[in-house]
Amino acid sequence: MKKIIYIPIIFLLFLVYSCSDSFLNSKQYASIDEAGYYNTPDAAFKAVTNCYINMIPWGDWDYYLNRIELGSNITDDADAGGSDANDRAETKEVATGRPLTSNGELLNMWTRRYTGISRCNSAIEGISTATSLVAADGSLLSEQVKSRYVSEVKFLRAWYYFDLVSTFGTVPLLTGTPAPSELPEKASIEDLRTQILKDIDECLADPNMPIQVTGNEYGRISKHVANAFKARVCLFFAGLMETGKLQGNAGVEYTLALNAAKTVYDSKSFALVSDYQNLFRGDYFAGEHSAELYKETIFTVIRKYVPGYLDIGYCTAVMYAGRGEVGGWGGNCPTIDFAESFDKRDPRKLFSVIKSGDIFPNVGGKQIEHSYKGYDNVHFQQSRKAFVPDKFRAGYSLGDIRSDWTPYYIRYADLILMYAEALLKTGGDNQKVASLVNEVRYRAFVTTSKKDEEASFRAFEADLIPIDDVYFETNLAVKASDDLLKAIKNERRWELGLEGYRFIDLLRWGDFVTVMNTYNVKQPYANKGKLVTDKSWPFPIPQTEIDTSNGVLIQNDNYK
Image (cartoon, rainbow, N blue to C red; front, side):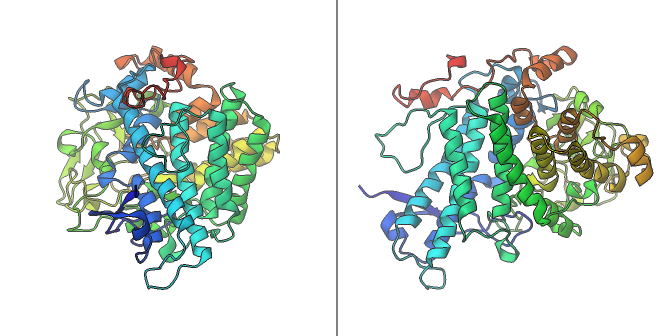
């Protein structure tokens, strides 16, 4: 039987790791047998871009929201929120520490990632075996370009598998296109780790993979992206090794993370945005500060809003804005615990959390007071990182989904902190570790604005004071003699909070149970953290997947 593949015909999606030209978007589909498809012009490039598209479904209803729901909203950083206690119920269920096997948020994670993996496997097979691929201009595709395409897709496969492993632990490992009768069993975490690093390392070893991309290439994988991701992956697996959840040598794994992070850091290809506010002002890569954002953003995916085309942008800015006159749906509510964890002098609190009563003007000059009462938001706070003031929305309305809001998948600040952690864990110089952490802290306390330039009133501004170099060194800089691991943990929370990293960080540090049990005592609403134990993770495999596997797929032991 011929394999039939489905390829988007029209691609118009921005994918950047610094900025982007049009790279991918799907409007309609056509079917064609595989042999015939790869004889069409530009077939290989379209197959590659089809592997990225899973990160940007229409309006990001699934992929990015899912990352935040399971990365931030099940932790002490944020609640799921919503119209009432029954809204976002599946996220709240995971947050208790004992989700059902029918949980829809976990099913979403499973299906979205395996859809991406299936596309990757199909592209790798098709491009690798095709003998006469044709470029868009009708010329034959070179072996060098083919090699790059395959390496690019292998990286994306590793990316999707890492999401699965960090959620479910053991999952089926597919590196080819199985026959309908082939139902693979789950692979061990050790085998999955091996395959993820194999895909990343083959991407890095490919001489045809650029170190960095520029111009129209922005948005595609490069060696800098691969190394930064490798650092994240190895820190995660090293943590599992330290906590007894994975066999292996944690010291060796931390060294892999160190080398990968150091390579990117030493390249001097990236830099921190001078003002943290500019990362989340609301205009993102479409605004006047875009040049700086390109330098800090190692990897992200942007769907550029194009008026009249699909008429939709990222839904995050609406899903995670306050309800009522604010115009949002009230999800991703920062907790009081998260807000109070900041030093009062830290402006990152201002640019992470909006408090009920804060005021933002609309384009007509009306002052819109953010009231976070009357819905499922016990903290009366919303995310500033997800909020787009209405002047940056296509319809100039807070309820308008059309904007250039952008997720950051790997920021340079994250890379610096990963480098610091790996250096500390491998016995590196404490002074160097402290210096790395202080790079991030200096930006936060010294060069970041103390006023939200898009707001008329922000309550947290009252606590902020001007801070110069002398004050910073005397009162705020981390010292080599400090508890540096604690400093790194805190810094990751303050720098990256509400961006979907908290769960994985707590898990790999072995802190998830303690932190969530403690949180439940302080804030027991919706039983968050009440049932968290060492048996909470890995989360259960969706029951529908088990039922359709005819007994091949076995539920995780802790959820049988």
